[in-house]
Amino acid sequence: MSYLIKIIIAVVVIVAASELSKKNTSLAAILLGIPIVLFTSFTFIWEESKDINKIALLTQETVIILLAGIPFLFLLVWLLKHGFNYYLALGSSCAGIILVSLLIQKYVLQ
Image: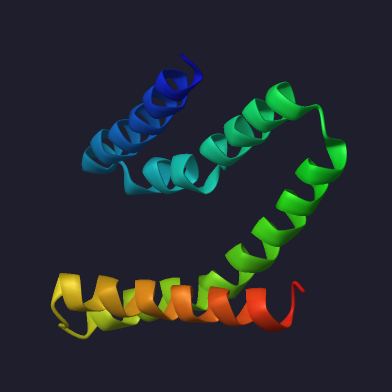
């Protein structure tokens, strides 16, 4: 049952942001900027484990990875504004985020 609730929350946020972006990109960006899925995940983990240290560590690692990924969002914007194919720009940005995340996990979070 908890998997179904998690899936429903994720789908609702994605659909809401997608539909909202058709009318107001600023509000859609705010919705996407609020870590609803992140906090919901923390809550599910808390309810399942009651392990505050696990939540604290997960939060710390998430913040580090998110901060490392922000420059690649700027790269995505730059690539799109300079006429690159959407999927190529998205793939490049995702690849960069994955690479930096793996490097951070290997060298920083150990």
